[in-house]
Length: 356
Image 1: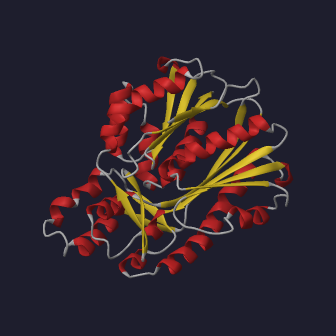
Image 2: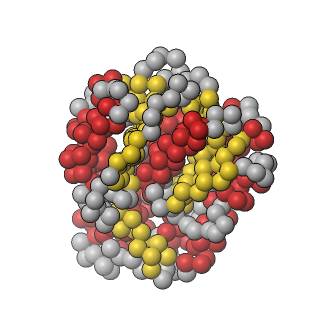
C-alpha cells in the first residue's frame, strides 16, 4: 500500500528546526557495563554479545532519568507519569526554540502536529503543550501515535500537506520520544539487549509555512503487507516491550531503491536528481544498507552517523536532528534536491522530497 501527495506551486517551506535533549548524559561505556550486569544471568556468553555496543558506533546518549533508574523495576503507570512530565518539558523547549529561530509569534500558528510513540496520554500531550507555548485555543491539534522511527518523516509530510491545504497559517510539528522509559528490567531478550545499545531520549520541532526554500515538494508513504512483526511494542504488564527483527538491513537492500525511485517518479524526478539524503540513523548496518542499495558516494550519510554517534537512536526524533544539522551545513538557495527518509513499524517507509 502506498500514498503520495502532489506537488503544489505554493510548496511548504521549512522555516526553522530546533531540538532538545534531557539532562542525563550516558556514555556508551556506562551502558555496556550496565548491560553486562543486567544480562549476564540470561546469556552465559554475554561477553560475546556485548560488542554490539561498540558496533553501534554511539559515544553518548541522553535520558530523562539517571542511570541507576534502569537497575530497578518500575510499573507502567510510573513510567508513563514520567513520560508525560518529561515529554512536555522537552517538547516545550524544542518548540520555543523553533518559534524563536523563525521570529514567529505563537498566535501565527494554526495547527500543531504532535508525534510520539513511547508513552500514552488522553487527551494527547499537545492539548497541554499548546497552552504552555501560548498557542491560540482554536489551534488545530493533530496527534500521531504508533509510527515509531518513521514518525519524524511522516509527521513532516502530514504537516506539509496541511500547509498546502491552509497556506494562510503556520504549522508546528513536534516530535518527542523517551525510549529509555520503555526499558523493561525483566526482559532479558536479545531485542532488549540491542535496544539497550541503541535507544535514547530527545525532542525536535519544525515550523512550516509558505515561503522560500527549502521547499517540500511532496511525500511518499509505503506500508508493506505481512511485515507488522518487524518492529514495534508488545504491551505487557510492565509497559511497552520492544520487538524488532534482524531483517531491517535486508529489507533496505530488497526494497529501498525501488521504493525511493517510485517516490521520485511520483514527483517527476529521478533518483539521480537527489544530491542530499537526510536519513533516519536507525543503526550502522541500516545506514550501510542505504549506501549500498542506493549507490551513494562516501560521506553521503555522514550527518546521520554524527547524530547516531552523539545522541543514539531517538526513534521518530532522530531524522529531525539530522535535518537541523543539514540545514545549518547546507544553506538554502542551491536548487539541489534531496530526501528526508525514515523506516518504521508497519513495516513502512516515509519519504519527503525537498529542494534547497
